[in-house]
Structure formats: C-alpha cells, structure tokens
Length: 236
Length: 386
Image (cartoon, rainbow over all chains, first blue to last red; front, top):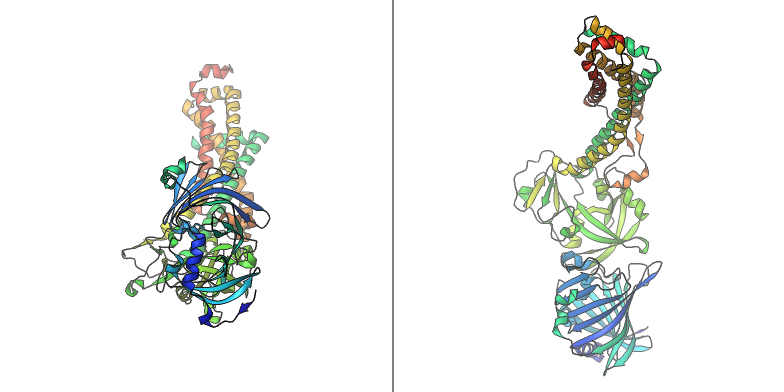
C-alpha cells in the first residue's frame, strides 16, 4: 500500500462516495447465512447463524451451530436488543453496560452492532488521499466525529475506487491509538451490487487473528414477514 | 460433704489409672485445639479488620446512591459531584472501568482515582508527587504478580470517557505496594484523581468518599454513608463462617472425649453398686451419691484443663509469638489475610472453653449417675445387679 499525494480538489466528494458505498451495502431487506470464526490463542470456534435484516435498524439472528449455541436467538429493533437463550428458555434484554460485552467471545461487542445512526450523521468524512490496497485503487477517507456520544472519535476507511466497497477500516482512540481494524474481502457481484462476503474484525491491542465473519449465502430485498421482527419469534 | 465428695472423687479417679489418663488426655487435647482454633480465627479477624480499615475503609465510606460495590454495571452512572462545603474531611475516589493490555493480553481493570496527598489510607499515594510520568499508576503485589508487571513498566490502557468514547494511552507503574487486602489490589489500578478526571472528563466527580477520623455524617441527598459495622459485616460473616466450619473438627474431638467419660461412668455405676449401697448405708442421700459420681466425671475435665495448661500454655504462647504461616493460595480467597496470622487468646475465649469442657463433662457424667437414684440400697449393698 502506498499513499499518493493529490491536491484536495482532485478528490471526489466524500458524501458521494459514502452514498455509493451505502447503495452497495444497504438494502431494504436481506437474508443471509453466515459463519463467525472466533480465533482464540489456542484454537478457533465457528458459530453458524441465519439472519434476517430490515433496513439498518432491525435484525433477527438464529444460531445454527455449534450445539452449545444452537437455538439461541438475537433480536434487534432499533436501539433495543434482546437475546434468547435456549438452555435457560429466557429472553434477556441487553442494555447499558451489558452492550459493551463481547458477542460469543468474539472481537465484536453488542454495541458494535447497535449503531443505528447513518455514518454521515456521526462523522464528517473527508477524502484525504488514495492508495493501492490488495491491488485495488482506493480512496482513503478520514472520518472525524461530529457528535460527542460516539465510541470512536476518529476512523479511517479505504474505499475501492471502482466498486465502492470499503476494503479496510481503522478505528482510533481519542489519543490517536489504533484500536480496531476491519478488513473486507471476497468482494463479489450479487444482484447488481458489489458486496464483501468476508470481514475480519481485529482488536489491535490484543494478540491473535481476530474474528472472521463469513457470509455463505445472501439474498437482497426478499419478502420477510413482519412477525420475524417481534419478540414472539424469539421463543419459536 | 463437698470436700469429702471432691476427695473421694479425686481418689477414685486416680485409682482408675490409665482409663482416667486416657480420658484426660483426649479431653485436654480437645481443650487446647478449641482455644488454638478460636485464637487463630480471632487473630485473623483482628488483623483483617485492622488492615481493611487501614487500606480500604478509613473511617467509613460515603457512597453515591447509584453505585453498588457488588455491581460493576453500576459504575457507569454511580458517581456524582458533592458540594465543596459537604466535602470537608472526605477523600474522593472515582472508579471507572478500563482494559489493560500487558503483552497483548486483555485484562479488565478498575481504574481508581485518589487524591495524591491523602493520608487516611496506607496506599503510598505520595509517590505520585515524585514522578513526571504522564499517567502514573500504583498497583498491589497481587496485581503485579498476576500481570507480571514491575516498577517502571509501561503498559497500554484503554478506557472510555464520559461520552463512552474510547481512549488509550500507556500508563507507568511507579510503585507496587505490599498489602494484605486483596480488595484494594486485585484487578485495580490506582492513579491520581485529577488525572482520571482529565482522562474521563468527569471533573470533580467521585464514586465514593472515604471519611477521615473527624468526619461527622449528616444525611446528604444522593449519597449514603456506611460506617465500620456495615462495611465490615461481610468480613465478619466470612470469618464467622470459617469459625463454624473449623468448629466441626474440635466438636468431634470433644464428642470423642465426652463419649469416653460417658462410657467410664456407665461402667463405674454398673461395677460399683456395692460401693453405692455402702455410701447410702453410711448415711449419704441418693442425691449426694449422684453428686459424687458426677463430680468424678467433672473432675476429668478439671484434670484435662490442668494437663492441657501444662503443654498448651507454652505451645499456644509460642504460636502467638511466631504466628502461623498462611499458604499462598489463602491470598486468593478475596478477603484480607496476612502472610502470618498471630493467634489472639482472650480471657473470654479461655474461660468460655473451660466452662464448655467442664459443663459438658459434668452433664455426660450426670446422665449415667442419675440411675443411682432409682437403685434399691439393700440390693445395691448385696451387690445384686440392677
């Protein structure tokens, strides 16, 4: 990867880029099967699930394997989150400090999944350069928080110049310390859009290879019945 | 008559020879063990209370109402500002959560901000005044051992400010304090409160205040005061639990000794019927004979006290002087425990134990002896088995 110095005026408008990225990544609804591979220091664990999502706000996830997780469910409606534990047959609302807990021991916290605000609502984005990443030309974007209640004050995102997909995201502490890195890969064309089928989340302060999130099958804009996004579906 | 009963009882006891000395030795052992065990627990209790007050509680805690020391989730909102005039004779402590990354490991910690010039706790906070480190930190010996940290080490810390925005920086370990109180040590990092205010944006906030010796509490809305009795209740309960647990062993020992006395008494009453008949024929009432036999049993306990004192006093004095070394694992129990515990034997403990042994031995001696009251003196005199 090498940065290239360009005059600010040569760079496209950051908002245009973000809109194009949104067009690729977001949809009215989607259903996907995924694997979350949590790389530990000695071994790795794979958790398979099937998810239904409506816009950016609502989602329902059903865990399929391993047997310890099988039957557990998670429902997110706006900024509210519930998990259903099959073994205890209990529905627990995750709120407050509990949102900061890790999801199934991964490098992801519940809070990471809870942000419902648009990126442009939270950050002021600016294209600050371009570089080559995995043989792809990318725009390097700098995002500075414009609101106070945000987990990461500063982010850097590398956007593929042709496919408008983020290829890398770095999240920084207020002090400038790099905290988390997200790498998007296996970008494929599905239903007239580009989409990354694999994402690696890595806590940069911790040893290890982080957590891989692999989408094995995805369908955009299918019809999803409303009852899926209700608390009743957690016990079904 | 009582003098006669004592004389007779003593003569009969000594006459019984080995049987008496076996009873006496087991009973004296139970007597010494009871005093030793209770002395050890009392010594531990005194040391734990003294150290916990010196290192953690001061003269009481004024806690923010939203803060529950047993609920880490309450740390997020469990803090506030106290007006300056209300803060007289109080030391503020702000507690926040953070994550330490020693050698790439992720360790959740409690960040505790405290005034650098406080003198109420034994924490060596004066060391903060002698350093120019950006974020100076003090940790306890257990924390240092668990994270393999030493003085001068720099380690990355991640925390959140009042808006829940992440921040991270290196902290410098400027001192490792030796202490017996895990609750100020395990998983905790002490830093100057001004620094923690700056790091979190919670300027002037405190989770709790530590009272100094001349603090007089007046109710403050949003805060509640816990005095020594309340704060030490958990410790007291734990120690009381230990006492009960340990008492099982010495109650078994005591039961063994009492059973031996009971057996001896049953045998005596059975074998010495002619003697009982003679006593009655000579004019003793049944009650006096029962008292004589009970006295014999009770005298076992007095002899046991005497014998126990002979070897117990030097032994217990020796342990009180050098203390009992505690295993390293005892430190992980989460309550204050010193490397050596010095047993404390109070007058109440010794007199109470003597009373316990004497009363219980008298009761078990009386039970078989009361059968005498039902004996026919003529038959007893003839030696007829009744």
